[in-house]
Image (cartoon, rainbow, N blue to C red; front, side, top):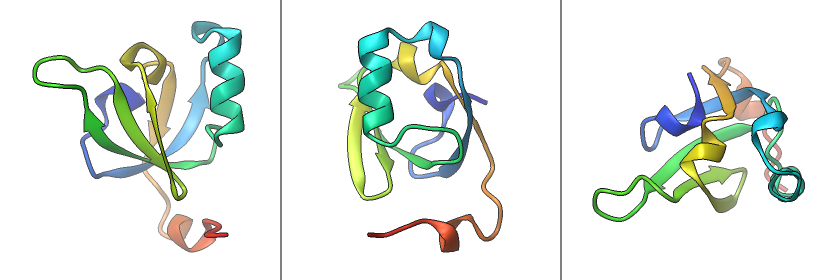
Length: 90
């Protein structure tokens, strides 16, 4: 499953990212914002009316927006039972 298909308000873990599908500038921005393998991510909102862009997601306490094309390069998987306990809230 990929981030662009994640149902709203469901938390998953990033399993891998295909950085070749993301521009260098966007990749640097996403890394700086904590988008990396193992991070817990939640889809919050999709676009306006019939558009699916942008996709708003939460990583930790931060909400960010990204294009659906970028989200499609991010593979996600179900969280383990203790993932929420291991997330830093600092």
